[in-house]
Image (cartoon, rainbow, N blue to C red; front, side, top):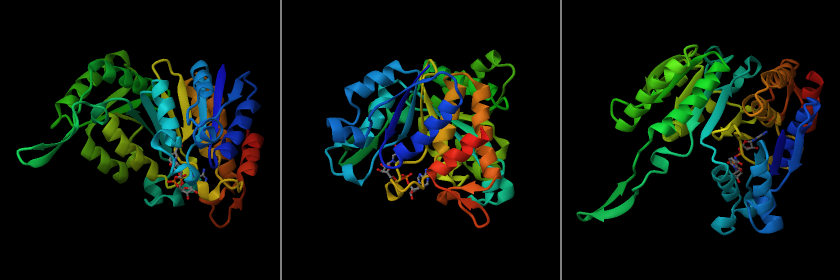
Length: 350
Ligand code: NAD
């Protein structure tokens, strides 16, 4: 059980250090090895995804990533920018399934812009296909036709691409409340008619999971009207891009949101949904909980250890109930702590 740890830039090293302490405290005989990614890698090797990192990431069962990027590297040539490292590793590892939970702990219900009763206790998971759809389809471009500019893109999915993301979503629903909502636009787009057909064909393999379907425009409305009706949602790359950001903003706390990107064998890259927060880097005030919760997802999805995952998540709930808050989620009447103190509190709760 080998984990490649890529702290990255900005607050990355501070928050991954706390997640590593949590993983080590579980005493599960993980082998952890660290490497460079993003700006930190450019500084040392000139390459945001250097060969040594590539080798380690390929060998490992899972990758834990902090975040990359920062103003220091913004003016470098495009191929040396930190984001290139991130896109590089995602592509290199063949990560086609993006899992983004949106959880709003009752203690943080005031952080949302929605009414507390609409979002308090929210716990949904969006499964987004990551390597296909209109974002990668050919032909594409902007041309001159009939004396005017003409822009075009191609939406497409093969049934095998739909089936493999469908299986990830059904499996995820099985590990949760066994309800899966597939989101499409089958009334207008043939590609998504195929999407719906393939999801329906898969359903008999998962008799314990209830499959429903929703058109994407309605899904966008339902997410703000009554988000707690959902358990797991699965959708294509473009719809998923938009809906997963919409869902994460329901919670209003960017420092709390984990994510996972999986390949066909459940090897995964686990990272917080937020960036490298250069404005607070090095100050010891960043919220490490999104990274700690990403480590919990790693235990669940790559190492298939539900008990350990639940143990970490329960510890996080406990520190919130005890009133510990980093600056980003602080409210009057709670106890403000720094990154390391928050890690200490999670360890104590474990
Ligand atoms: P950001 O997510 O880094 O920060 C947005 C705001 O949220 C900032 O005010 C920041 O202080 C705060 N914040 C973020 N994470 C926090 C945490 N854990 N605890 C407390 N506060 C937190 O987004 P940005 O400012 O747009 O981007 C900064 C850099 O991060 C850029 O270089 C960008 O390219 C990069 N970025 C990287 C990733 C990634 O590595 N996956 C994702 C997004 C942005």
